Structures are given as structure tokens and as C-alpha cells.
Image (cartoon, rainbow, N blue to C red):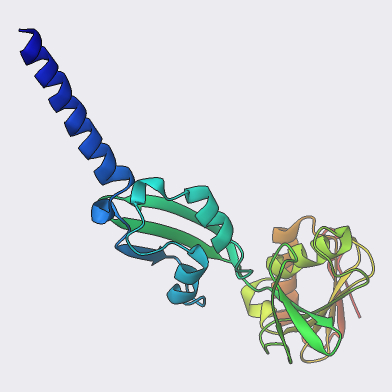
Length: 222
């Protein structure tokens, strides 16, 4: 009886040991593919290289947090989430930063997202992005944050006409349109009301040169 018990213990230990070896050390359950989801402009191969996971590395021992950290080294990405898909796939789901404005940076322009994070530098600004002019074009600056909120609140039919956004203060954001008209938007408060009023005014009052919607209750034209 004791011999049988000892045999079963050894057998169990052997099975457990083999299973542990297969999961944690063997390439049998290693990473055979890396699936990239959510990328639009960032190539999948670049994300895979940044992830830094070798082929056939045991899937169970991949440090997901470390992989996410490495992938987030790509400045065009706003977030990254890594999961294991058994038996041998690593899934990396990313969200790209959306460019909303361009900021002059020396002889080049910086393309920034809604939080003011620089996505990339270019020699010229993309034609569909407004040029943002503030005293301190850095993430977290209250004036820049207000200006970026305004950029994102401008209605679509007007946004395509905005060529420049100037802000001397968080409550003094001004839009310059491609046809020469200007819009004093004010602060980022009451964006829906301002957007609705501005869209209507630009259609009805075409001869005006400037529109002040900073206070939706008292709109002025010049």
C-alpha cells in the first residue's frame, strides 16, 4: 500500500512538473503570433518591434505591464492594453492619439492631440489642422488646455475653415477663418450653445467680419 501511495505521489509530481515545464519554460506554449488591434497610422510591425517579445517566449511568463510600457514609448499612441490569448497569441490593443492642432516649434511645427501631447514634428502643418498660437505651448498649461478644448468644440462645418487659433488667456480664445473672418469664442464654457449660435450666424450674417459668441446670451457682430 505504501509503495502504491509513493508511486502515485511520484506520478502526480511528475505530471505537475511536466505541466509546469510546458507552461512556464517550454516553447510549446510560447508566443507564436502577436495580434495588433486598433492601429490606423502606426504600422503593426513597428508596434511588434517595440513590444520586444521574442518568438516562442513562454506566453505565461510574458510581463504584460512591461510590454505595455514599451509599446507606449511610441508617442502616437494614447493607450495600450496587452492580453494573453491561449495557446500562443499575444494581443496588443492600442488607441492612437488624434491630432487636433499644429504648434510652431522653431523651423518646424509640432502636431498635438487634445491634451497638448506632441504626436510628431513636420516641416509644414497639415492643411486641415489649425495653427495654435499661445504663449506657453506645453501640456498642462491652462491657456493651451482651454484653446484645445475650444478647437475640439468647434462644429464640423466650421472647423474645416479655421486656420488659426489664438489665445492670450483661457477666457480669450479667438478663431481666425480662412476667409478672413474672426470669431471671439471666449473660454471653453458652454460649448454646445456657442457652436450652435456660431453655425447659424456664419450662414445668416455673411457680411460680418467678426463674431463675438464669448457670451451666448449677448452675441455681437461687426
